[in-house]
Image (tube, rainbow, N blue to C red; front, side, top):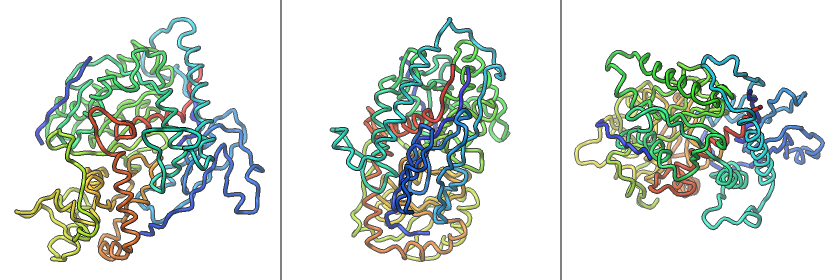
Length: 509
């Protein structure tokens, strides 16, 4: 068995245990499907003059989500990758490099392989790959349809507008996912470090996701032979709680636990060695998620890693890995988290309150803390008598600087409060960037421009601000946790991110 890369379709601890620049004008969106650059007509050329043999999807405003990377195709089509200096926090050269054209075979695996019955799962795998190939083609076709609703009726929700890179392609991709995507959750391992995660902490989304997968209400299959991906249900947060010695800065015990776990599933099942982990995924909201995965080469290099700490400077690869929103559930309750004042009642230009964690916050606090500027309020600790949540709801822009690591729950807190998020980070890939156009509803400020925050935000016209704030309300549904889950919410969006990355891989029998 082997796999090859294909074009990408772009605190108190509580646990759940459940087994059973700032230009904001709208961009001219272009679509490149099957290697054809549809902008060719603007150049006086027919785009059909440049056919490419690859099967995949490219959707983007300046960001390609499909590339030809298979060895057998021969001459490769050039990826159309644009650059935009205003997107300093989404380093496109890192996000969308051409994936390496490579094949991994089971003989290179460090883990003993489980034996599989004759012709199993080869024929089922062949049918699965054929269905995924058809899905790629359907998504590519949808990307060229102007009015998707006339073709694919959806009574619940149809994505539209500039908050999406290509709403038609996203919608068709989502429908294909609902129809085809099956996830097998390995049953090996026991709580509290497996099949379990935190529900009342800054890492709540990790526990909530694991909990939903354990319920098995959506996408989960009990038949591993029909699965498109395999979930490794370990919780880095819980491993840190039970295996880490505080103050030691040593996580070898956690790494050994992950090594042992993958060794077990590789011995009992044929699927890890079949693909070298390429159709497997892990999920972690802990800062040490990337570091934990590094103990198993196939996990860090081949598997889909769903990470809150989505830092390209620390090995996060957007064509393979998925960014996951960090949501701080202080009480574990899901109701009453969203809403804010109307734009006319938002009297504060920009607000931030948070401890001095990392160099970016140090720069922010050193420049803006204690300035007595009524427009830009920056605190290390919320003053007595002031409500943090109320300040979010009365501010026009909410500053979201990185802490020790790039992820911050303040991004989702801003979206919940209908406050336009201001991302201040280096190397951070925001959640769901494969389908969401973050420039439409957020502001990106480079670290060196922290002293110019007031100038930058004041320079955004009222018309632009109202448009962005309206889009924040529109995108909010994709970041909300629901119980039970709802279509297009944060759980389903995370699954969709995994689905897209599975479409980027073909497992070969």
